[in-house]
Length: 393
Image (cartoon, rainbow, N blue to C red; front, side):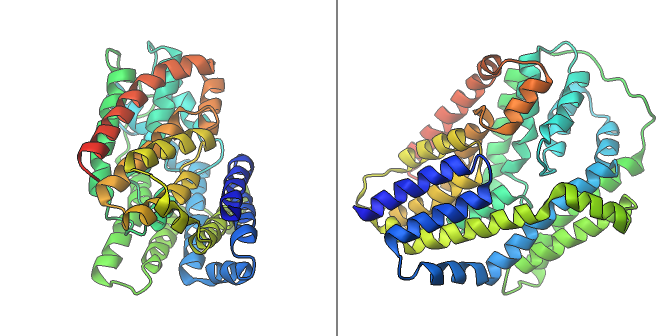
């Protein structure tokens, strides 16, 4: 009984505090859970998690990622990329917020909202809001150099790249839903103020793609004992490339670092790994063995937590360890569908800052945003649940 009290108090603290600071929320929740379940070994468990090589490397990696986005944004590389995508109005409205969404920075939705406002003439404001939020986050489903996928696969104990073929299917389905509900029937052409520049298209794309490509090559050819080393090298190369292409001096980079706050992302990653370590040793997972939980119920919990927290990482850190305990391992299709369930709650909820910022920027009431986004979310939830049920995942 004491263990359950500690678990529910820890989850409550996680849900409340994570709205302000996810790293602090993870540490506090881990402490609460540990006090109720493993008081005698809590400090040792925390130290073991913090000193683990994977924790240290992941913290550095997640801390470096926002520096790439900050460098690309401050040096105008992302603006150049978007202004040179001569691909038609509908593909532009899908791809431009998706590329901006790869830059993990607070308030990033405000960068893509004006682009959608200008390029989406003739489209209602609530659909523009749906376009900005839906497509802004859609590449999170497959982009491996993101904290969301890194943490989720770590929590599920699967390799970072293993679920991507299944997530690509989810991505294509999401693209179809987004097109059907937000872009179908829109017309008109885009007007460009400057001539096309191949250089300004290729260089920023290189920065975005070099990290995952190099990471795959290092792991395939060198097969390092600690797999995070390959990811760290890849992210560093991507950051250096962004600095070279953006002609970023040390003084300017210092300003970017202050603005991007990489230490807060690293701290968040350390908190996550501590929480997962305490969660693993607390005995809570063993208690779930006697609880009648099905994959469908866990999918519903994943969606609900995504909606309640407005995050991907927090639900993943709770749901996937429970899934592992109940079913032994997380199959790749099951991971893709549950991760998708979290994503759907994440793009629907007003708790998600991108939703509220988009609504404010495009002058849309939250209820009108929900009316636009609920139909594709409802269809995606229904299809995912059916697949999860009938495929015996």
